[in-house]
Length: 424
RNA sequence: GGAGAGGUCGCAUAGCCCGGUCUAGUGCGCGCGCCUGGAGAGCGCGUUUACCGAAAGGUAACGAGGGUUCGAAUCCCUCCCUCUCCGCCA
Image (cartoon, rainbow, N blue to C red):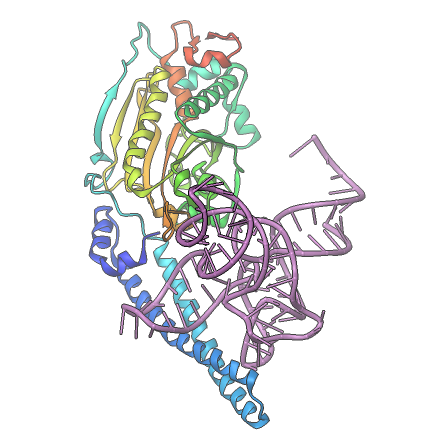
């Protein structure tokens, strides 16, 4: 959510931000209009309420019955006006919130202009692309051949885009999760195990509602959503709280499965495990003071990079341009790892500085040391790498001519002595 | 899922039966000051948040949302949560 004061005082800045995101600017005028209506009604209704409060007190003190009755009649009239205006105010405020909740965050001045993802800026490449003296296979061949990915069973149990990991494959994923969590803990994050189902307010706070309704799974009976990312419950963790400045920054890491309907991407990336309705991910999340968020952003991205580096995966990084920037983000770096089999760079991490956008929605503030008004915190989120895609890269880059796959050294502590995954 | 109890200003509580003097008393905690060689005790003052307003000031919030009323922490309804017991269950 944007600051209504900012929109009121600097509407051109907000229009500009919508333009660079290639979005329609008319909501800005709607907001200005509704905001004016709102404030007009508030002034009117609050004057009447003050009158009613004073009048009601007099009634309490009034001795003369006739005078008292007259006053009651008068106040009843005032009360009716108040009710009518309150109703109007509710409507205007609901409308205002509705429009506001669709406005994206303002891009940072450090985010380069661009129309769409083709204009994202390359930051760097790191690591050596693996070389093979044979034709490297895609994971959808490696996995089934090794008996560690079972597409048919997934489809049988649930439907298309679902799969089962078996034996060393399932274990490999568990190793990845454990490796990442332990690494992030070393990097200064506190592990959280959160609910995987959350209520509407929580999804709204993280900025996934109302815009991404179509991508969420929902239990309509209980009015609960399945988390599309750990970012959602981690944002909600401090919802409606006032944190102490001394406690900031707060860094969390969490493993969760992620559930996405992906209606919009139907038909894309259907082969293999690249894009499913359910996938596992380890997330990093930070709450900090506004002035600290640029540095926290660089740190979090460095932490994501370290994850790829330790796994020995060649990667490259991008900065998203304004046209490709996510809804709540002001600035985003993406990290892609190379997958030798499908010959593709796979996006495995996206780190964003969300500034106070989620903090406003979720009402997360901190009290400055030495007192003063509570301020909104800044929040940042980043994937500590999405599991299936990292798994793809590991399987495809570490494959050998005989069809076996070498287990990266950093994962071996969790593999129970398995150094090479061989056909069963 | 059933029965009962309860949710009030950081914490603990009073107020609710009998609606107005209650944004709300008290204790603890916390902050500032006095006192003291210093500390403690003691004393004094202060100690939620949001919104509207240039300001003065005003409005709102006693789990949430509705209702009754001139007026609701207080009465009525719905929902949520916590605790105790029962049922069921990994």
